[in-house]
Every structure is written in structure tokens, then in C-alpha cells.
Image 1: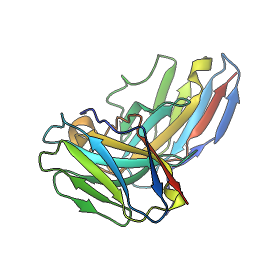
Image 2: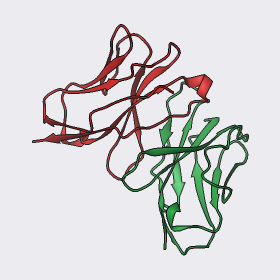
Image 3: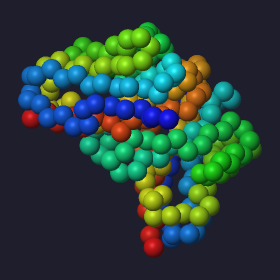
Image 4: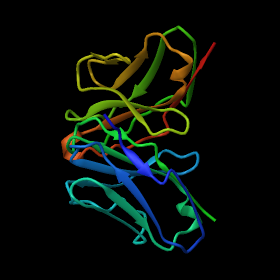
Length: 114
Length: 112
């Protein structure tokens, strides 16, 4: 079956612009996770969803970052007033439910802020 | 999640077994050991996980010491396509809602 998909695959934007990143999880997966990987760095956890609810948003780097999930499926990560330090690969993963389950990752969105 | 320590890099000849070590001396009783890998420019890929017992699947074997303070991922017959960054993660699953804390991992290079 289809895996986790993310769009766009690449995004170049100018500093100060807003960007929206999309994640389509595996059908039936109730848990969805967002991570960020900066150049040469490890993966940094941002936020997770159980259904449409995001119980813990403390991993988001600043209040310019927000995320939502609708219909227990598609999720969007929005970055407002982008800064150069936001340049990174944004990865989405899904699993059947939260906790102890294999996470399946998408290919990521490569964001470059000029 | 318990901190894990891995060597920064390892080499392996194609066709030989690759044994990747991981130390997790502060692991708690409810934390699983997970292994993921990330091939260049791709998202991480799940390999295997275990709690106490050794585990084997079609990709690899996981050997966990009796005191659970360390583990070894074994790729029995490494191929060039196994060249990747391998991450060892200790996670409590349900109590940490599945959040994975990735370290720097081990860069495994498989050479002909």
C-alpha cells in the first residue's frame, strides 16, 4: 500500500514569507509525528497528533510554528515569517497508534529560506 | 528516554556481517530499544526493536544483553545498499507517546 507522502518535496522561500508543509499519513494510522532535521544534525521531534488532537506542542521551536490535523488524516505544518534558521528537512511519520509502534517516515520536505 | 551512545562511524566489507553496538546503561524497565536507519536523502526506516529478548526479522537481528545496558544490531550479510546512518533509540513507547529521540547515530559504510 501507499506509504507516508509529503508535499512539496522541495520548497525555496524568502525570509519573512509563510510556508505550509503537508503530510499524508498511511491510511488508518491514528498517530502522526513531525520531526525536523537541520543540515548535519540529528532529527528533532516537533509535535505529535493522536487523531486530530496535539496534546503536547512543547517541541515546536517558536510560536511561528503551528500544526493541525483534520479528519484524522492529513496534517499541515505552517511556519509563519520564515527565518533562515528554519531551513531544514521536515519529516513526517505515522503509526497505528501512539506509543510503542513502528513509525513510518515520509521522504521529507526540504525547506530553504533565503 | 534513556540516552544512547553509539560509535560515530564503522566500516564493513560487502557480504560480511555488520555488528553495530549501542550503549544504553540508564535504560529503564519499560523502555524498548529501537533501531532505525537513514539512507542519504531519505526518511528514516524502521529496522527492528526489542525489550529483553533477542529479536530477528528479515532485515536484521537484535541482541540485547541480559542487564539491558547495551545491544548490538547485526546485519548478517551487508550490501552496499546498507550504507546509511543507523540510530539506536531507547523509548518508553506509550508513556512517551511514541516520541523518538534520535542521537547522532553510527555512519555505516559498506565497501566492496
